[in-house]
Length: 240
Image 1 (cartoon, rainbow, N blue to C red):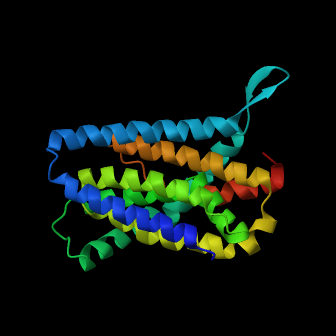
Image 2: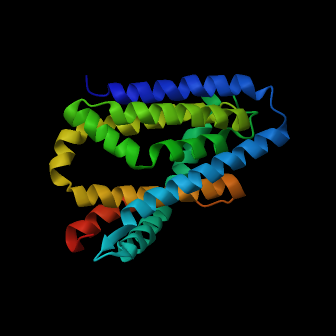
């Protein structure tokens, strides 16, 4: 059954988030802040390691980098498009709507937790590649592994931010299911190099998310999402 992997992923987020929210009552603010910093540090290094995996290669027994110009152009153009489209604002509006219908208007951390959790769970190689595998081969392995990671991450996020992170299951479900059911149409158009480019840029965005969490920065990562499309176009024209 296509889409089962995403259903499991979303279910793990809801279950982990509910457990984390219940556990929240046992954590004092100082511990919550330290836990969030620990999450931020982990996310930073997950993003860095993912980026380096695609940027570094061995050429004639020497370690060299690749794709620097590609990611610079992709991120710059993607950020410009995202700012013009106000994608981050769209996430905020969705968060406000979910906050209202869930009767959490008094929760000051709801929007921040929702946006951070949404970007962290939706942006990255595992979700994209896992959704492809689910749609084309009915292989749920990658998404099940992602479900375990997301479940633990959202549990800790919910302990620090409240119920907001739990609602990231909504955009994640829509996003990954859309990729899954369009995979048959999309996959023949994408080369392995394009998928590597998407994974590289996605990992860099994950690093930005980690910086936001750990240092309380305000990088509008949502506005960088068009970079994932720009990198595909770049590779189609000039290669990796």
